[in-house]
Amino acid sequence: MLKIAVLVSGGGTNLQALIDAQARGELHNGQIACVISSRPDAYALERAEKAGIPREVLVRREFPTQDDYDSALLALLARYDAGLVVLAGFMTIISARVTGAYRERILNIRPALIASFCGPGYYGLRVHEAALARGVKVTGATVHFVNEVCDGGPIVLQKAVEVREDDTPETLQRRVMEEAEWKILPRAVSLFCEGRLEVDGLRVRIRKEGESA
Image (cartoon, rainbow, N blue to C red; front, side, top):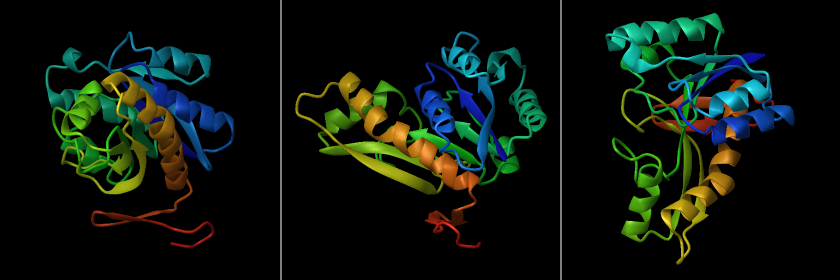
């Protein structure tokens, strides 16, 4: 059983999607081992407590340097024997030291169809504000591996969501979560835990069930 560490910063809706999928038996060969929050007041911590999942808080500003923070984060991941790290609304920078230590073992969920509306500065409602301002007809969500380039890692799964004429950033954000994020994140995590993701450069191939590597 592969142990999963979920990193959060806020309400934890994507964490809840993972918790619910685990309860339904849909995280095949995977188990959430811990939740690590960048904020002590994140509601995601309450979600973890209700589910009986160990919780940790790691605040960047409490460490004098990025390297000190990285050491603490890596120590926590090692303590829980994490084989997969999932960024579920995590708002703290993941350094090259951490991505290097967990090469192709960190997944992130983005509320956009990469390569649109991604990169530095695009997070939360800003993504949906930008999509509406540009007048796109379709948006969605992406699960990708994390590397040293912001939102630049290999894409695992994407799901499109139609933009409606009367959408606001808030209504679009909610629908992208419900129709895309909460569906593809548990799916991508399960595929990883089953050993069915094969990375070749920036492309990810999903092996058929039962197919050997």
